[in-house]
Length: 106
Image: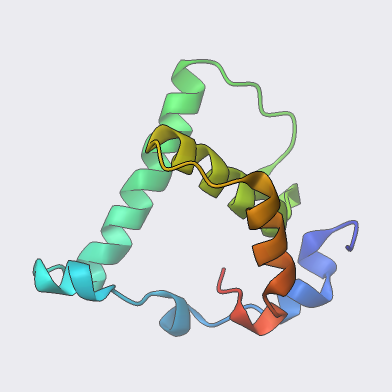
């Protein structure tokens, strides 16, 4: 793993926004458009940031310094616990190891 994600080979393999911003069928069935989907993602990210600031979560480093390959499984693990559909951490680790770099879309 590279010391700096932004100079790593993984960063160079990131997909274009058109490949990432895909509205899931469930959301399409509810009438959500691509523009609305992007707004929802932006709103959620801003809400998380503001909540962290309000509860004074210490962030010692910039988000750009974190490797998404570490952040993504952590978020999924915590979200699964909150939804009471716990996923074992070793399964997430194994799932990430099974994925090729081209399957990652952030």
